[in-house]
Image: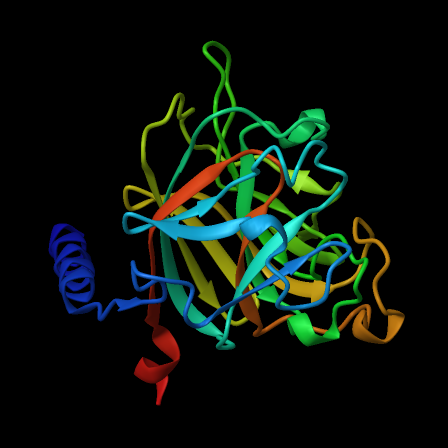
Length: 257
């Protein structure tokens, strides 16, 4: 048993060292990324909501453009579709929530995984059909986990049973203030793991299209029961300013060829 554990540890170490990270965010501009904000056409970066300043990708709500949030949920889509990968994101929440943002969206953002093609979203659609790795920031006191799962127009299974409810909570610690947090999402087709510091804080399987929690979508894009084994990645704009200093990926599909 001891030799087996040592072997597994060495294999894990070897894999970690052999990872080839590709930078999705180049630290200079939004090249390769396209915004989709509720109420606006694909590609319309209303109010310069998504911007790059001093090497950081920021979600900002200038008061002259956002006197009220007005339900303008946004998503910044990367150009490439993925199926098997490890996505790493380093983020932090800053500042105050835009006026009129919903209470649940305070210090709330996320990465949308296996998302529908943004070209299939309607102008007034609120969220893409996808699996959301939800990022949450803690208040001064109390527990508030990050790297949860939310399911806009999707469903998944855990321990062989379908997950009930829109969001399920991870086992992560609470991260407060404006500290940077690095998270990883390991995706293998329809199976997902959320990790922080190498520790799995949530896992679920058999992702598929179904359920509710998505509005104003084209019914043709929501084929309930269809396995969700690939899709696009996007970063959220949900009314609280957030910054991303790194978005990088290991394409595991290349290792399977």
